[in-house]
Amino acid sequence: MPKQTIKEYATKNKISIFNVMKMVKSQKLKTITEVIDGKEVVYIVDEDVKLTKEDEVIVQHSEDINLQDEIKTLKQEVAKLRSELNRLKVTVFKMGKQDAKILKI
Image (spheres, rainbow, N blue to C red):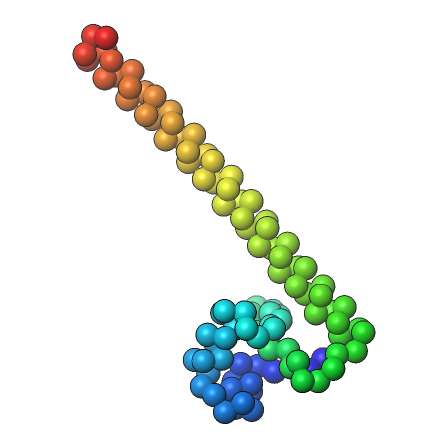
């Protein structure tokens, strides 16, 4: 598969690593993230070289896995926010009752 690290891409195209990182973050470059020795390594897919059918399947599968991970993370965050919201609602409700007792309403 035609892939390059960020440093290799920057060297090949004679631009700074910082600019390559900005392009990756803004999704102007197609990337693949792989875990190697417990570290995530970002590879830039070289669009100049034509991909074989097998490489296209691997790229698509990699993108699907990343989306599934993001969906799972977002669902966990939503559940956490809902529990926090419920806790705050209970707190506000209790405070409202206490204020009503103080004011004898």
